[in-house]
Image (cartoon, rainbow, N blue to C red; front, side):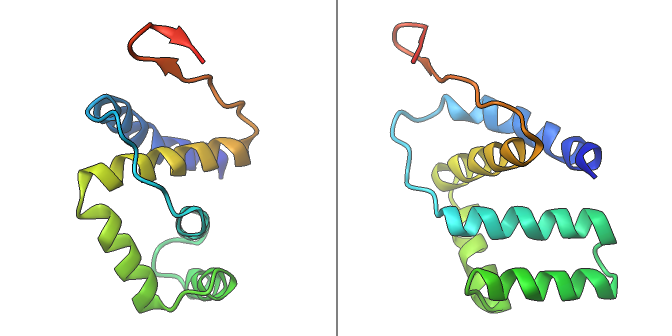
Length: 117
């Protein structure tokens, strides 16, 4: 499971890394949405997008985080429509997956000084 999640998120990480330098101001990220998003994606990778098991898992995740299908889709649409929101959201998703896999978080570099914080 961990390997398949990595295969999907690796290209996403590259895109995030390329786009991350575009803005100095980072909009706030809804951590509840990030957690729900990651859990749903893991369920889809585990069971397949159209299986009955994934539908049950998706329903459980949405209930756990207080979403309906419609409110979750609307929250995702809101994030995905704006690059200034999408990039930090995707970085939060990558960080969440890394934390679930036990990968330590890398220190951020100060862009102006080239030093790690």
